[in-house]
Image (cartoon, rainbow, N blue to C red; front, side, top):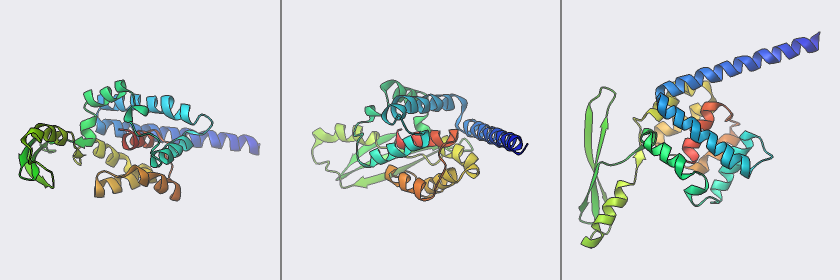
Length: 223
């Protein structure tokens, strides 16, 4: 009788956990947007199946992520195409998911020993705001180098603190200690170093096996 009760109790706990994870995933995807969530699901599954499962086949999914983080620290993946396919990066970019995490300048111009940049965004009220920034310490003395400098600077992104990626994590951050920690660091610093996360997760014993946690990790570690 006791064994039967324990079995039924375990089944109930697992069912409740699955329902909670499903509810949190729905909230996350609602904030991120349906089409972009679909792409994020696809690239997360591709990363887990094509990279983690092949590189670390005899380990649990959680261990696979941690081993991948350790290998990142050791610079074992110097090229992005070793962890993401061209097709998946194309999905990431063409779906607009890239712009929910990254914020690129609209224009760049040459200054003496530096560049100027113009940034534009639409706030939550639908108002378009623009402002300029200047970066110095760049050798702009050779006019022949100006085009390459501008092209390079246009590709350098800032963290999009108004993007739906951050909003999606905010919507579910209370559901797990990992998401709460991730949001706090993201809110304070924007981009966070990949080398930070292995230590943070292991030392604080953070659970990263949930569907939202894994999607966030893929966005952090790979894209």
